[in-house]
Figure 1 (tube, rainbow, N blue to C red):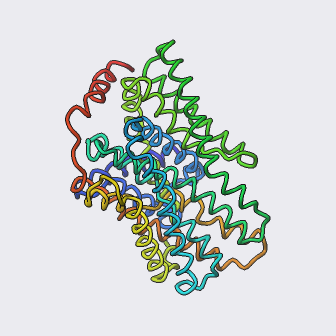
Figure 2 (tube, one colour; figure 1 turned 45 degrees about the vertical axis):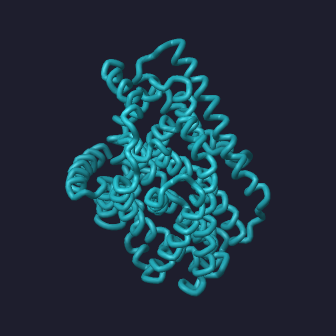
Figure 3 (cartoon, helix red, strand yellow; figure 1 turned 135 degrees about the vertical axis):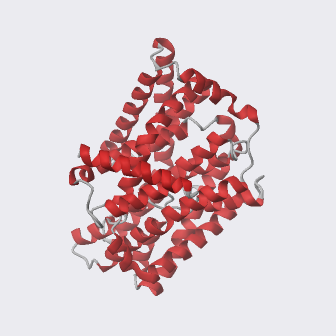
Length: 418
């Protein structure tokens, strides 16, 4: 496994360099590298590495969401908080509704199967969106109005909302007894519980760091370990209590940033170094989950359905931004930033097929759902990432120089704080 990982890292670094020189985000190249070397194409990646890919992708996602949390300032959230809530639900609902209506005529699905497919496609990908938003924040693009912060926060909540709806719909599809009211009530409960637990853990960590003053590297290790344990707690509580662990992970960074901006930027700088490795693991392993043959089976009709869903989603995103202080180009950027799909589709795309098999029901609908989910990754993750990187610098305004002062001071001291 180690040799396979080493080979993948070397190739990913080369691909990243080549794509950046072509003015294409390096993560696009990493995704395509994972697809090419994955088990469904060339099959070069070690089976042991693939077996551990779920845990590796989770750690990488935690790293980037922690960095996102350390960029979620209270002032920024006060400016865009209402838009975050709208963006976390409205575009997903409109896209899911469009797929539900168009699924039967385009793919021959039942309306219930189309609704399940709509819930799968309705999730935006934090794995693709958040790294790009953090890059814009680091560059100061759109940061004064909080646009990247708004997008990264909304994308995380969007996933919680969509996954709960997906669970309800799959249960209804297979005839399971589902308490719809409890599941839907679990959406705000899981988000609020995640925020509350994250704030509590972050406050405890802040006080410990203040009292014992550990080195920056040790602070990062403690934050990472506790974040992983929070995800474990979510799995243990899944049958009894809804809890959004990834929201809690972001809240940890938020409260530390509020209490000590210098400490937060110092930890974020360390996480940025870890991200160099984590980014390679995340995007190559996500790419490795993509079965090109399954995607091809979705055909032109599947591509048309995905496109129609994206159009509906874009309309919903634009509606959420109406009446805001954002300019027309900035609103267009948010629409583009809300298009990529990857991690959630890879995680739940095959769930309906497995559920139908377990229930002894016809599986054709599940196979189509999986095929369209995979195709959505192939079409939207690389193109969406490229579009965000292209549109962002052309539509977002540069923040004033003082925006970088605290971060630059932290970066300077970070070099002397191992």
